[in-house]
Amino acid sequence: MRAPAEHALYARFLRGLAKSPDRAAVRVGTESLTYAHAHELALRWAGALTADAAGPPRAVGVLASKGVTAYVGILAALYAGAAVVPLRPDFPQARTRGMLDAAPLSAVIADAGGGAQLPALLGPDSAVPVLLADSDAALGGGLRRIVPDQRHALAEPRPVGPGDIAYMLFTSGSTGRPKGVPLTHGNTSHYFGLLDERYDFTADDVFSQTFDLNFDCSLFDLFCAWGAGATALVIPAQGYRDLPGFLTEHRVSVWFSTPGAISLARRTGGLAAGSLPSLRWSFFAGEALKCQDAEAWQRAASGSVLENLYGPTEFTVTIAAHRWDPVRSPELGANGIVPIGAVHAGHEHLLLDADDNEAATEGELVISGPQMAPGYLDPDDERGRFVERDSRLWYRTGDRVRRVGGGELAYLGRLDAQVQIQGWRVELAEIDHALGAVEGVGEAVTVDAATDEGTQLVVFYIGQQPVRPVEFARKLSEVLPRGLLPRRYELLDEFPVNANRKIDRKELRNRAGDLLRAGNGRSGNRGD
Image (cartoon, rainbow, N blue to C red):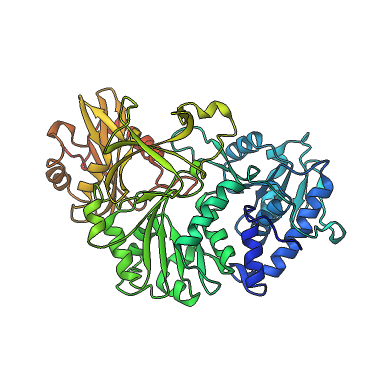
């Protein structure tokens, strides 16, 4: 096999194959798939995809739960020179159908569960063929089936250019209709090249694989592990019941998740000092990381280096990083949130004020550089996000940040998380931070809801038992005029999460509106 171009995303798996052919590339429960076996299967499946197509496949959907089919399917799509379109069988069909309509699919790879949904998703007149990994599973709806055959197996992955699309991902839709984001091999090459320089991952590492495969952070899990010849281990739901025991048993050395995993580990008693001794690296992204959570995790994983990673999907997984320091980090952060760090080398960034003028210290983060996606699948979605400025293309993140020295940035919140009530500009992140200091509150989220009386605030929180509203009011009176205090404080067992496992603020807003309408703002857990 000739050496693959270094910019090809699949080159990272081939690098791992050369280092660790007989090591597990991925483990899911009791299933384990070696690099050599995954490579062989992916070449066979990729050969079937290319033999079936009139021309090189453009994009291949992978509709499968986490398992052998999903991981080999990702490789097979890349080996075929196509873009991977990861899809989840447990998504609402209307949402998945919208993704299928947006992405120019040449074929779909599916497990039995995904295959059962395809007749309804694709429709009876669909010309999109299906590679159903389970040979015993039936494919209905008149869909055409691709059958892998060793005679058509590729000898090596098809060549790709830096501008060719490697992945098509869809934003969570938390701020509106999900947008399709194509990421090129050039985007991912720059990204993983920087990670290789920053981290010392080896073939002996075991990476957690916590993210769903349609979430951009899963690329970090897989291609950092595969580039090192290491193992990616899927973390099952039951693994969180005794996280210290699970991570120790499986020798997990690299952890990456949303910060929500810290709250879960705390509630299950998994954050005792020194309880996560196997970890060398701990990464968090996807939501704001609280200083108190970073401190708690660092005490448990005292032998690991902890980093807060930041980045929108449109900038290839993560575009900034801050390495936690127990003294320096809280001083640099805002509202008790860990800084997001410095923007990656090779990129430029600006801060813009409300009038779109460049600001010196605080404003919306706007970035340009080699990790930036070429746009959205639907160009109509690009207005207001991908913008021309100073003769170059920039991406407006919608995130407010502050310069805090040393080239680092502190996260202040989303532009749309700043609400106006009775003429006051209210920072929801500031309220959440203040609520976190109330005894008995593990975590709190404040949302705004429209009522006949105007915009009102509602707080949802997690704790062992209800907290008296007067306790909330006493603390919030330090940051809010009394007339702006939240109307309701609702105790939850857990926060709802969206498709990408982030707190679903849209759902909380809906609940807040229902609560205020049903009770006209009056309950035993009111704040006024």
